[in-house]
Amino acid sequence: MTTRTPVVLYVYHCAKCGQDGQLHLEETAPEVTTACSMCGAKVLAEEGTREH
Image (cartoon, rainbow, N blue to C red; front, side):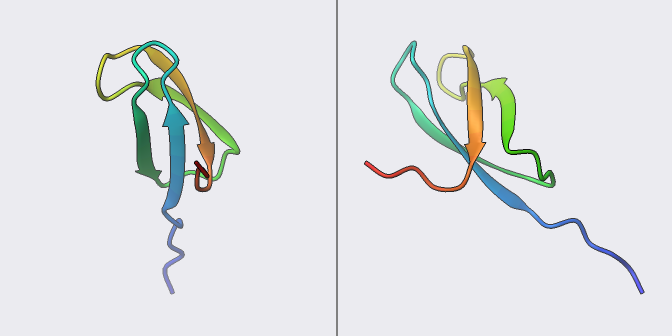
């Protein structure tokens, strides 16, 4: 039997350009540091969905 790592949704808001983005990663960390897909600035992505 094979164990599969769940794919987790992470969301972020870039303070530099205002972009709201999301990632789907095979990780289970509560927060992930990544780059904004629009401007490349460092952003902190959090697990879950963002309410507006």
